[in-house]
Length: 461
Image (tube, rainbow, N blue to C red; front, side, top):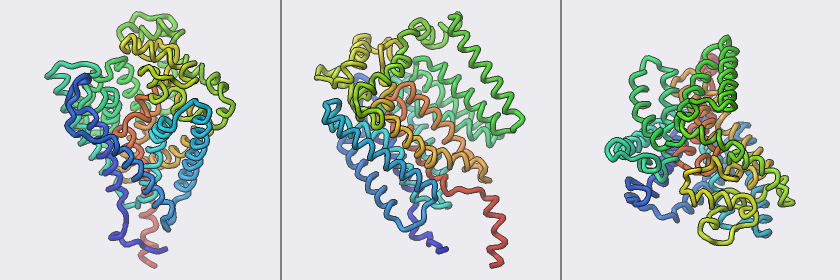
């Protein structure tokens, strides 16, 4: 087996850090320091740089593909499935544009928003070596988040702003909230593996959580509860096998209790965000309506059973934008989602996605189709989640922290994406890029116990 000189190794860590910094620059530059209605552009980054980013991702991916080095089997399978998903999407987009359901611009923009994180994971995993350290990504991510949190505290504590006006230096308050909850998860993951450093973790949680709660504003109490309970479940699950049945029983009981409270319209619901509004309008709940309409939307187009209705054709921001600007929307938007967005615009978002007739929650399913979703999910598992799970058995504490953070953060962001695609997986570079980069760097981090066991034999040889 040939040994590659460290001097000629490509550092996947450096590449990952560069993309994480760029993610924050891009998300911050669009609206920095100013208010929602009167933004102050501290870093006026031209939107044309998105094309440069896209070109760089494609070039790096090609370089990885033609690289002579031997890649792990999981990388080969994951990247192959990712390419298959892209080819299926190209066919879907072509058919959709030809049928008048989408435009080339909407198809390209929507496709890139969802595929870019997965391709970035493939790139970093293809370049990485065992010497690449994922904890460096976490340190950079946390530093950038602290800067945003300090700005958000100024907006929240000094200017007494609330909701959308608390966005740190980011484009949108929801994006800031998403990325800040990931910071909370990182602090909790470090606390789990180093409980003696609870003061440091507590200080970070106090720095992050209040502004994330103020920024998210709508039902933020439920998000806090879900994050905390989810992390506690993970801690109990990893701690000992004997505790797992008890953890399942407790959480199953809590879930049944919550469902029972919703059915009986308990008084405490009115005190938890806007949950009371949701319960009262359960029949028109946008999330339920959206998923219920998914089969009908797919049946509308003959080719959608395998390839979907085409990116940018149904519920993505690019698909519904013509509704809000007075232009002619696509037939799918006009039939399923146009009225809901007009309603949301007329009520200035007060009702939001909770009581809309339909929402953008099914954009990923309807636009990309079940086959593409299956390929993308398998790629996410192989390139990000599986390495993170394996990292939990590593002797290095920093690698275990990275693995636990990737698992919890991926679950959190994907869950948000099921609730509303616009504020989930596809919306924020700063939230998704650090997760996939860290997970990708864990592909080469095998258990050091095995490495130590083989060391004496190597020395003898």
